[in-house]
Length: 130
Image (cartoon, rainbow, N blue to C red):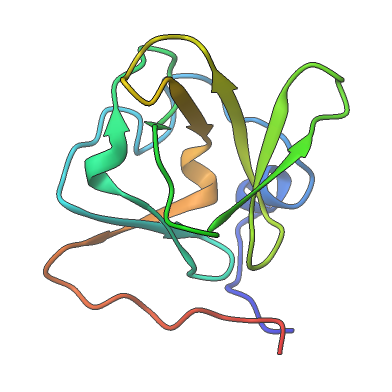
């Protein structure tokens, strides 16, 4: 399996399910037109159109691309973890019922788990397990 090379910080978040500090990530206060992809495998995850400011310190999205996200119970027994459906990399957590948007969903994502591709650029090839 070939995946993108990760820094030690990225690996800690994506593979070991750590969380970056709030308000520290490059995409928290970032609003450009394009696509957010998985930093590990390049799979498209979120359109910039679904990003909103939840004031929580992490990039927040109220919709992902179809079949891009896998939702699994978090070991804490309370939250729902979100992973890249393609490679299983940890993205963050999903929260429902907070009322931030009409969709009433907040995918709270670590900036270290995603990479932004501006609309004018071509998306990189997705790296798969095949």
